Image (cartoon, rainbow, N blue to C red; front, side, top):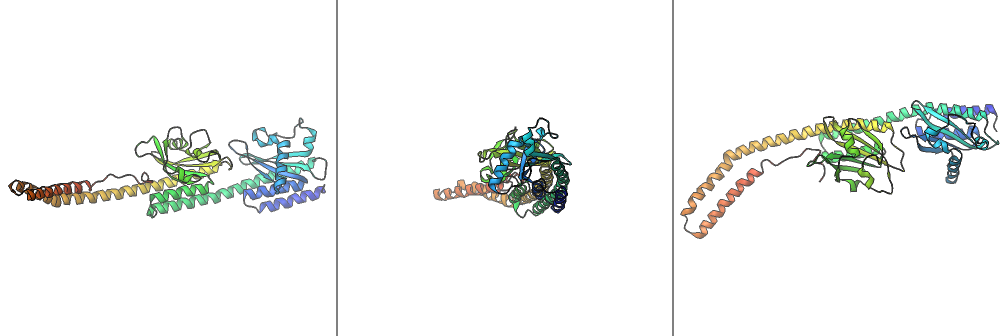
Length: 406
Protein backbone atom coordinates (compact mmCIF):
# COMPACT_ATOMS: atom_id res chain seq x y z
CA UNK A 1 0.00 0.00 0.00
CA UNK A 2 1.43 3.44 -0.82
CA UNK A 3 2.49 5.56 2.13
CA UNK A 4 -0.29 7.68 3.66
CA UNK A 5 1.27 11.03 2.80
CA UNK A 6 2.04 9.92 -0.74
CA UNK A 7 -1.57 8.88 -1.28
CA UNK A 8 -2.91 12.23 -0.07
CA UNK A 9 -0.40 14.00 -2.30
CA UNK A 10 -1.58 11.82 -5.18
CA UNK A 11 -5.19 12.78 -4.43
CA UNK A 12 -4.29 16.49 -4.27
CA UNK A 13 -2.60 16.26 -7.64
CA UNK A 14 -5.61 14.46 -9.13
CA UNK A 15 -7.96 17.16 -7.80
CA UNK A 16 -5.81 19.88 -9.37
CA UNK A 17 -5.95 18.10 -12.73
CA UNK A 18 -9.75 17.68 -12.38
CA UNK A 19 -10.09 21.42 -11.82
CA UNK A 20 -8.85 22.09 -15.34
CA UNK A 21 -11.55 19.88 -16.86
CA UNK A 22 -14.65 21.88 -17.88
CA UNK A 23 -17.00 19.07 -18.94
CA UNK A 24 -19.04 16.89 -16.59
CA UNK A 25 -18.07 13.72 -18.45
CA UNK A 26 -14.38 14.66 -18.26
CA UNK A 27 -14.53 15.34 -14.52
CA UNK A 28 -16.29 12.03 -13.86
CA UNK A 29 -13.75 10.18 -15.98
CA UNK A 30 -10.85 11.69 -14.02
CA UNK A 31 -12.66 11.08 -10.73
CA UNK A 32 -13.19 7.37 -11.30
CA UNK A 33 -9.53 6.86 -12.21
CA UNK A 34 -8.41 8.92 -9.19
CA UNK A 35 -10.63 6.76 -6.96
CA UNK A 36 -8.99 3.57 -8.19
CA UNK A 37 -5.46 5.00 -7.96
CA UNK A 38 -5.65 6.65 -4.53
CA UNK A 39 -7.34 3.67 -2.82
CA UNK A 40 -5.24 1.19 -4.77
CA UNK A 41 -8.39 -0.59 -5.93
CA UNK A 42 -8.59 -3.01 -8.82
CA UNK A 43 -11.73 -1.34 -10.15
CA UNK A 44 -13.71 1.80 -9.49
CA UNK A 45 -17.11 2.91 -10.74
CA UNK A 46 -19.36 5.94 -10.40
CA UNK A 47 -23.08 5.24 -10.38
CA UNK A 48 -25.07 8.29 -11.54
CA UNK A 49 -28.75 8.62 -10.58
CA UNK A 50 -31.50 10.21 -12.62
CA UNK A 51 -32.97 13.13 -10.62
CA UNK A 52 -36.58 12.12 -11.37
CA UNK A 53 -36.54 8.32 -11.11
CA UNK A 54 -33.63 7.77 -8.70
CA UNK A 55 -32.55 4.81 -10.81
CA UNK A 56 -29.00 4.35 -12.07
CA UNK A 57 -28.95 6.44 -15.24
CA UNK A 58 -25.34 5.82 -16.18
CA UNK A 59 -22.26 4.11 -14.77
CA UNK A 60 -18.70 5.29 -15.39
CA UNK A 61 -16.01 2.62 -14.99
CA UNK A 62 -12.29 2.98 -14.46
CA UNK A 63 -11.66 -0.04 -16.68
CA UNK A 64 -11.36 0.51 -20.42
CA UNK A 65 -10.71 -2.99 -21.75
CA UNK A 66 -14.06 -4.64 -22.66
CA UNK A 67 -13.27 -7.77 -20.62
CA UNK A 68 -12.25 -5.66 -17.63
CA UNK A 69 -15.41 -3.55 -17.94
CA UNK A 70 -17.55 -6.69 -17.99
CA UNK A 71 -15.73 -8.05 -14.92
CA UNK A 72 -16.16 -4.76 -13.03
CA UNK A 73 -19.86 -4.72 -13.96
CA UNK A 74 -20.28 -8.19 -12.49
CA UNK A 75 -18.40 -7.14 -9.36
CA UNK A 76 -20.60 -4.06 -8.93
CA UNK A 77 -23.77 -6.11 -9.31
CA UNK A 78 -22.49 -8.65 -6.81
CA UNK A 79 -21.06 -6.33 -4.18
CA UNK A 80 -22.95 -3.07 -4.63
CA UNK A 81 -26.40 -3.84 -6.08
CA UNK A 82 -28.02 -1.60 -3.44
CA UNK A 83 -26.20 1.40 -4.89
CA UNK A 84 -28.01 1.13 -8.24
CA UNK A 85 -31.07 2.84 -6.77
CA UNK A 86 -30.76 6.18 -4.98
CA UNK A 87 -33.62 5.31 -2.62
CA UNK A 88 -31.73 2.27 -1.34
CA UNK A 89 -28.30 3.86 -0.90
CA UNK A 90 -27.11 3.26 2.70
CA UNK A 91 -26.32 6.39 4.68
CA UNK A 92 -23.04 4.87 5.81
CA UNK A 93 -21.34 1.56 6.60
CA UNK A 94 -23.87 -0.86 8.03
CA UNK A 95 -23.23 -3.30 10.85
CA UNK A 96 -25.25 -5.80 8.84
CA UNK A 97 -22.75 -5.79 5.98
CA UNK A 98 -20.96 -9.06 5.51
CA UNK A 99 -17.36 -8.67 6.72
CA UNK A 100 -16.00 -10.19 3.54
CA UNK A 101 -18.02 -7.77 1.39
CA UNK A 102 -16.93 -4.78 3.49
CA UNK A 103 -13.32 -5.77 2.96
CA UNK A 104 -13.68 -5.96 -0.83
CA UNK A 105 -16.11 -3.09 -1.49
CA UNK A 106 -16.45 0.52 -0.38
CA UNK A 107 -18.81 3.26 -1.51
CA UNK A 108 -19.20 6.98 -0.77
CA UNK A 109 -22.06 9.19 -2.04
CA UNK A 110 -21.54 12.26 -4.24
CA UNK A 111 -23.74 15.20 -3.34
CA UNK A 112 -24.26 18.28 -5.50
CA UNK A 113 -26.35 21.38 -4.94
CA UNK A 114 -29.39 19.42 -6.17
CA UNK A 115 -28.99 16.49 -3.77
CA UNK A 116 -27.67 12.96 -4.19
CA UNK A 117 -25.96 12.85 -7.58
CA UNK A 118 -24.18 9.51 -7.54
CA UNK A 119 -21.93 7.10 -5.66
CA UNK A 120 -18.23 6.34 -6.01
CA UNK A 121 -17.58 2.63 -5.58
CA UNK A 122 -14.20 0.91 -5.31
CA UNK A 123 -13.77 -2.87 -5.48
CA UNK A 124 -11.01 -5.29 -4.48
CA UNK A 125 -7.90 -3.67 -2.94
CA UNK A 126 -4.76 -4.62 -4.82
CA UNK A 127 -2.00 -4.56 -2.20
CA UNK A 128 -3.97 -5.23 0.99
CA UNK A 129 -6.47 -7.77 2.20
CA UNK A 130 -9.15 -5.12 2.82
CA UNK A 131 -9.91 -1.41 2.54
CA UNK A 132 -8.94 0.77 5.51
CA UNK A 133 -10.61 3.73 7.16
CA UNK A 134 -8.03 5.96 5.55
CA UNK A 135 -9.29 4.76 2.18
CA UNK A 136 -12.78 5.96 3.14
CA UNK A 137 -11.43 9.40 4.08
CA UNK A 138 -9.63 9.65 0.75
CA UNK A 139 -12.76 8.60 -1.13
CA UNK A 140 -14.98 10.98 0.87
CA UNK A 141 -12.67 13.90 0.07
CA UNK A 142 -12.70 12.95 -3.59
CA UNK A 143 -16.51 12.69 -3.53
CA UNK A 144 -16.90 16.13 -1.94
CA UNK A 145 -14.56 17.69 -4.48
CA UNK A 146 -16.36 15.91 -7.31
CA UNK A 147 -19.73 17.23 -6.15
CA UNK A 148 -18.52 20.82 -6.26
CA UNK A 149 -16.77 20.21 -9.58
CA UNK A 150 -19.88 18.66 -11.14
CA UNK A 151 -21.94 21.68 -10.05
CA UNK A 152 -19.47 24.01 -11.75
CA UNK A 153 -19.15 21.88 -14.89
CA UNK A 154 -22.94 21.46 -15.12
CA UNK A 155 -23.45 25.22 -14.90
CA UNK A 156 -20.81 25.75 -17.60
CA UNK A 157 -22.30 23.11 -19.90
CA UNK A 158 -25.82 24.44 -19.41
CA UNK A 159 -24.68 27.95 -20.26
CA UNK A 160 -23.02 26.60 -23.41
CA UNK A 161 -26.13 24.65 -24.36
CA UNK A 162 -28.39 27.60 -23.60
CA UNK A 163 -26.23 29.64 -25.95
CA UNK A 164 -26.74 26.99 -28.65
CA UNK A 165 -30.53 27.08 -28.08
CA UNK A 166 -30.51 30.88 -28.29
CA UNK A 167 -28.52 30.76 -31.52
CA UNK A 168 -31.07 28.34 -32.95
CA UNK A 169 -33.91 30.66 -31.87
CA UNK A 170 -32.18 33.59 -33.57
CA UNK A 171 -31.72 31.62 -36.78
CA UNK A 172 -35.38 30.53 -36.81
CA UNK A 173 -36.54 34.08 -36.16
CA UNK A 174 -34.41 35.41 -38.99
CA UNK A 175 -35.75 32.77 -41.38
CA UNK A 176 -39.33 33.51 -40.42
CA UNK A 177 -38.87 37.24 -40.89
CA UNK A 178 -37.66 36.70 -44.43
CA UNK A 179 -39.65 33.50 -45.16
CA UNK A 180 -36.75 32.69 -47.47
CA UNK A 181 -37.13 28.92 -46.98
CA UNK A 182 -40.91 28.92 -46.75
CA UNK A 183 -42.88 27.76 -43.72
CA UNK A 184 -42.25 24.09 -44.58
CA UNK A 185 -38.48 24.49 -44.59
CA UNK A 186 -38.48 26.59 -41.42
CA UNK A 187 -40.64 24.08 -39.51
CA UNK A 188 -38.26 21.32 -40.60
CA UNK A 189 -35.31 23.38 -39.35
CA UNK A 190 -37.03 23.80 -35.98
CA UNK A 191 -37.46 20.02 -35.67
CA UNK A 192 -33.83 19.39 -36.61
CA UNK A 193 -32.58 22.00 -34.13
CA UNK A 194 -34.50 20.29 -31.31
CA UNK A 195 -33.25 16.86 -32.44
CA UNK A 196 -29.64 18.04 -32.20
CA UNK A 197 -29.82 20.24 -29.11
CA UNK A 198 -31.95 17.85 -27.01
CA UNK A 199 -29.98 14.80 -28.23
CA UNK A 200 -33.33 13.15 -29.00
CA UNK A 201 -33.97 10.05 -31.09
CA UNK A 202 -37.08 11.45 -32.78
CA UNK A 203 -38.72 14.89 -32.98
CA UNK A 204 -42.11 15.79 -34.45
CA UNK A 205 -44.04 19.05 -34.77
CA UNK A 206 -47.78 18.47 -34.54
CA UNK A 207 -50.72 20.82 -35.12
CA UNK A 208 -54.49 20.40 -34.80
CA UNK A 209 -56.15 19.27 -38.01
CA UNK A 210 -57.62 22.03 -40.16
CA UNK A 211 -60.85 20.00 -40.39
CA UNK A 212 -61.08 18.57 -36.86
CA UNK A 213 -59.23 20.16 -33.87
CA UNK A 214 -59.50 16.87 -31.96
CA UNK A 215 -57.24 15.24 -34.53
CA UNK A 216 -53.51 16.00 -34.54
CA UNK A 217 -51.35 15.95 -37.63
CA UNK A 218 -47.58 15.54 -37.85
CA UNK A 219 -46.44 18.40 -40.05
CA UNK A 220 -42.69 17.68 -39.99
CA UNK A 221 -40.48 15.05 -38.39
CA UNK A 222 -36.74 14.55 -37.83
CA UNK A 223 -34.59 11.69 -36.64
CA UNK A 224 -35.55 8.05 -36.27
CA UNK A 225 -38.60 7.16 -38.37
CA UNK A 226 -39.03 10.68 -39.78
CA UNK A 227 -40.33 9.50 -43.15
CA UNK A 228 -42.85 7.16 -41.55
CA UNK A 229 -44.13 9.77 -39.10
CA UNK A 230 -44.43 12.76 -41.43
CA UNK A 231 -48.05 13.68 -42.25
CA UNK A 232 -49.54 11.01 -39.96
CA UNK A 233 -52.85 11.83 -38.23
CA UNK A 234 -54.13 10.49 -34.90
CA UNK A 235 -56.60 11.37 -32.10
CA UNK A 236 -55.28 14.08 -29.79
CA UNK A 237 -57.02 13.22 -26.47
CA UNK A 238 -54.83 11.09 -24.20
CA UNK A 239 -51.59 11.95 -25.98
CA UNK A 240 -48.42 13.70 -24.80
CA UNK A 241 -48.95 16.24 -27.56
CA UNK A 242 -52.45 17.23 -26.45
CA UNK A 243 -51.34 17.40 -22.79
CA UNK A 244 -48.65 19.90 -23.76
CA UNK A 245 -51.03 22.04 -25.81
CA UNK A 246 -53.68 22.04 -23.07
CA UNK A 247 -51.22 23.08 -20.36
CA UNK A 248 -49.10 26.16 -19.89
CA UNK A 249 -45.83 24.27 -19.47
CA UNK A 250 -43.98 21.40 -21.04
CA UNK A 251 -44.35 17.75 -20.16
CA UNK A 252 -41.50 15.40 -19.25
CA UNK A 253 -42.81 11.91 -18.57
CA UNK A 254 -41.83 8.32 -18.84
CA UNK A 255 -43.01 6.48 -21.94
CA UNK A 256 -46.32 4.69 -21.48
CA UNK A 257 -47.95 7.30 -19.27
CA UNK A 258 -49.70 8.79 -22.31
CA UNK A 259 -49.92 7.92 -25.99
CA UNK A 260 -46.97 8.85 -28.20
CA UNK A 261 -46.88 8.17 -31.94
CA UNK A 262 -43.10 7.74 -31.76
CA UNK A 263 -43.61 4.37 -30.04
CA UNK A 264 -44.88 2.88 -33.29
CA UNK A 265 -41.46 3.32 -34.90
CA UNK A 266 -38.95 0.49 -34.36
CA UNK A 267 -40.70 -1.12 -31.37
CA UNK A 268 -37.60 -3.26 -30.82
CA UNK A 269 -36.03 -0.05 -29.44
CA UNK A 270 -38.75 0.92 -26.95
CA UNK A 271 -39.31 4.49 -25.85
CA UNK A 272 -37.88 5.53 -22.51
CA UNK A 273 -39.05 9.12 -22.08
CA UNK A 274 -41.03 11.78 -23.93
CA UNK A 275 -40.56 15.55 -23.79
CA UNK A 276 -43.38 17.67 -25.22
CA UNK A 277 -43.66 21.45 -25.19
CA UNK A 278 -46.38 23.72 -26.58
CA UNK A 279 -45.63 26.61 -28.87
CA UNK A 280 -47.74 29.67 -29.47
CA UNK A 281 -49.38 32.04 -27.00
CA UNK A 282 -51.48 30.51 -24.16
CA UNK A 283 -54.67 31.71 -25.82
CA UNK A 284 -53.72 30.41 -29.25
CA UNK A 285 -51.68 27.23 -29.22
CA UNK A 286 -50.28 26.59 -32.67
CA UNK A 287 -49.20 23.05 -31.83
CA UNK A 288 -46.54 21.12 -29.93
CA UNK A 289 -42.96 19.97 -30.33
CA UNK A 290 -42.50 16.36 -29.21
CA UNK A 291 -39.06 14.80 -28.61
CA UNK A 292 -38.35 11.26 -27.42
CA UNK A 293 -35.43 9.14 -26.35
CA UNK A 294 -35.12 5.37 -26.54
CA UNK A 295 -34.33 2.90 -23.77
CA UNK A 296 -30.69 2.71 -24.90
CA UNK A 297 -30.23 6.48 -24.38
CA UNK A 298 -29.82 8.51 -21.17
CA UNK A 299 -33.01 10.09 -19.87
CA UNK A 300 -33.78 13.77 -20.39
CA UNK A 301 -32.79 16.17 -17.61
CA UNK A 302 -34.92 18.98 -16.22
CA UNK A 303 -32.58 21.42 -17.98
CA UNK A 304 -33.55 19.87 -21.34
CA UNK A 305 -37.20 20.64 -20.62
CA UNK A 306 -36.50 24.23 -19.55
CA UNK A 307 -34.40 24.98 -22.62
CA UNK A 308 -36.88 23.32 -24.98
CA UNK A 309 -39.70 25.39 -23.44
CA UNK A 310 -37.75 28.61 -23.97
CA UNK A 311 -36.94 27.64 -27.55
CA UNK A 312 -40.56 26.67 -28.30
CA UNK A 313 -41.77 29.95 -26.82
CA UNK A 314 -39.45 31.94 -29.08
CA UNK A 315 -40.23 29.77 -32.11
CA UNK A 316 -43.95 30.08 -31.39
CA UNK A 317 -43.70 33.86 -31.25
CA UNK A 318 -41.79 33.90 -34.52
CA UNK A 319 -44.39 31.58 -36.10
CA UNK A 320 -47.19 33.85 -34.91
CA UNK A 321 -45.43 36.82 -36.49
CA UNK A 322 -45.03 34.82 -39.69
CA UNK A 323 -48.70 33.87 -39.49
CA UNK A 324 -49.64 37.55 -39.13
CA UNK A 325 -47.41 38.45 -42.04
CA UNK A 326 -48.90 35.75 -44.27
CA UNK A 327 -52.41 36.82 -43.22
CA UNK A 328 -51.55 40.41 -44.08
CA UNK A 329 -50.25 39.32 -47.47
CA UNK A 330 -53.42 37.29 -48.05
CA UNK A 331 -55.51 40.34 -47.17
CA UNK A 332 -53.51 42.44 -49.58
CA UNK A 333 -54.04 39.84 -52.30
CA UNK A 334 -57.75 39.69 -51.46
CA UNK A 335 -58.03 43.48 -51.67
CA UNK A 336 -56.32 43.41 -55.03
CA UNK A 337 -58.67 40.66 -56.19
CA UNK A 338 -61.65 42.69 -55.05
CA UNK A 339 -60.34 45.74 -56.91
CA UNK A 340 -59.84 43.69 -60.05
CA UNK A 341 -63.27 42.13 -59.53
CA UNK A 342 -64.89 45.56 -59.40
CA UNK A 343 -63.10 46.58 -62.57
CA UNK A 344 -64.14 43.39 -64.29
CA UNK A 345 -67.68 43.73 -63.01
CA UNK A 346 -67.92 47.36 -64.09
CA UNK A 347 -66.28 46.87 -67.44
CA UNK A 348 -65.36 43.47 -68.87
CA UNK A 349 -68.12 41.31 -67.34
CA UNK A 350 -70.81 43.92 -68.05
CA UNK A 351 -69.66 44.19 -71.65
CA UNK A 352 -69.55 40.40 -72.05
CA UNK A 353 -73.01 40.19 -70.52
CA UNK A 354 -74.26 42.89 -72.88
CA UNK A 355 -72.81 41.10 -75.90
CA UNK A 356 -74.42 37.86 -74.76
CA UNK A 357 -77.85 39.53 -74.42
CA UNK A 358 -77.56 41.05 -77.89
CA UNK A 359 -76.70 37.68 -79.39
CA UNK A 360 -79.58 36.02 -77.54
CA UNK A 361 -81.94 38.73 -78.84
CA UNK A 362 -80.70 38.25 -82.40
CA UNK A 363 -80.76 34.46 -82.30
CA UNK A 364 -84.53 33.97 -83.08
CA UNK A 365 -84.20 36.07 -86.23
CA UNK A 366 -81.55 33.76 -87.72
CA UNK A 367 -83.12 31.21 -90.08
CA UNK A 368 -80.01 29.29 -91.07
CA UNK A 369 -79.72 26.25 -88.75
CA UNK A 370 -75.91 26.06 -88.88
CA UNK A 371 -75.55 29.75 -88.10
CA UNK A 372 -78.02 29.47 -85.20
CA UNK A 373 -76.02 26.55 -83.70
CA UNK A 374 -72.79 28.52 -83.95
CA UNK A 375 -74.50 31.55 -82.42
CA UNK A 376 -75.88 29.44 -79.54
CA UNK A 377 -72.43 27.95 -78.93
CA UNK A 378 -70.89 31.43 -78.80
CA UNK A 379 -73.52 32.55 -76.26
CA UNK A 380 -72.71 29.50 -74.11
CA UNK A 381 -68.97 30.25 -74.31
CA UNK A 382 -69.61 33.83 -73.16
CA UNK A 383 -71.67 32.62 -70.17
CA UNK A 384 -68.96 30.08 -69.22
CA UNK A 385 -66.27 32.77 -69.49
CA UNK A 386 -68.24 35.03 -67.13
CA UNK A 387 -68.59 32.19 -64.56
CA UNK A 388 -64.88 31.29 -64.72
CA UNK A 389 -63.82 34.90 -64.22
CA UNK A 390 -66.08 35.26 -61.18
CA UNK A 391 -64.93 31.93 -59.65
CA UNK A 392 -61.24 32.83 -60.02
CA UNK A 393 -61.50 36.02 -57.99
CA UNK A 394 -61.84 34.70 -54.40
CA UNK A 395 -60.39 31.19 -53.74
CA UNK A 396 -60.34 30.00 -50.08
CA UNK A 397 -57.06 30.26 -48.11
CA UNK A 398 -55.38 28.50 -45.16
CA UNK A 399 -53.04 29.63 -42.41
CA UNK A 400 -49.29 29.48 -42.89
CA UNK A 401 -48.61 26.72 -40.36
CA UNK A 402 -51.67 24.68 -41.30
CA UNK A 403 -50.45 24.69 -44.88
CA UNK A 404 -47.26 22.81 -43.96
CA UNK A 405 -47.48 19.41 -45.57
CA UNK A 406 -49.11 17.88 -48.62
